[in-house]
Image (cartoon, rainbow, N blue to C red; front, side, top):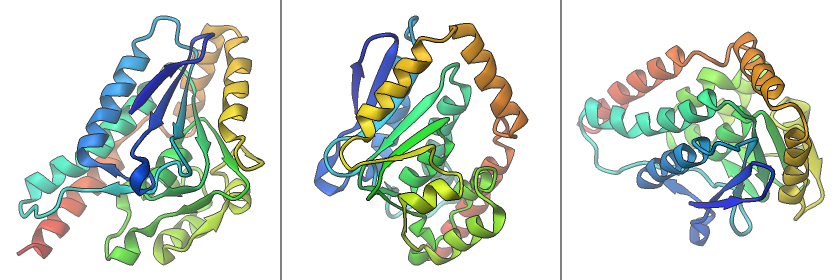
Length: 235
């Protein structure tokens, strides 16, 4: 993970595992949470901009292999909730700048961001079912952004879909030319920085609460359900 200050209280966090499309491992999820802790503690913070180094935003999560107990699986999946909790508790907007692939965790985290900007050729998917795993953690919040029937179909089929469709169904705020997502995200962040900071914080907190995005009960239920299921398969 790379942290970069862009001025005006704008801080960027970049996925840097470019060799495999910025897949994120369990260890890297912990690093991501730590990077967000560092950024969220900045006294001048006005927004957080997320991007991927190289051609792709994030090609998905790679969990620990060989786990056989429900407790171990739960702890591994719980790292996703730890990262999501940082986004949920943030006082300032999160802005995703997506180029290339945003799959699995990358798709889900983009969906949760307050503002999401993607290149016109970006590709999204929830591929878990193609690996025999239901994406329950993502679905604990996905249908709050995306109409239920579309959310269920995307989770069920694992199909790839483009930026235009992602914008149509509510995942994205804007679609921009290839190679310009980060520049546009930083431009949007500067717009936020120019506003009254307390008003932005109040607006974000209230909006997310009204939208039902403040409660992680179903996400924890998803982790518990998946932990029991995956541990049973390992025996």
